[in-house]
Length: 122
Image (tube, rainbow, N blue to C red; front, side, top):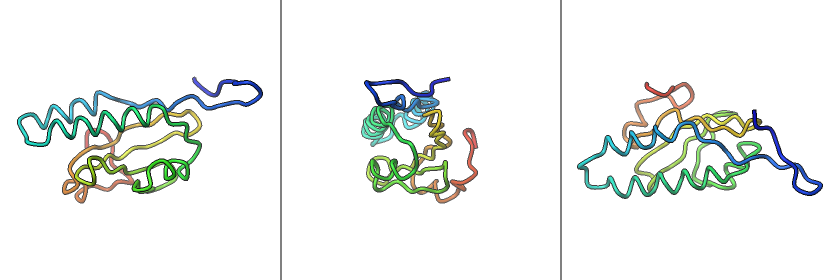
């Protein structure tokens, strides 16, 4: 289990671990042949890199990094991807610095799910 590490006299959280990047890859593959696939891939890759380097202790710090993110509950966040064309629902365990991707899809499809309860594979 990754808790924290020491830098000088200050303890720091480790970077956020994203579970699972394969979810993003599969989503991009599902868009094969569609006009915006490359742009979606680029946007998800950029999101992954930014989140992987993040050091969030709570949802307020997520909101500082992503002003357009929606805080759904203490551990659920909805990120806007590629402007607002796509959405990504994540559960974040701030203590362990782990982000679980629960759902990714088009904005229109997001309106059909419950962001508070959706699970990967729903």
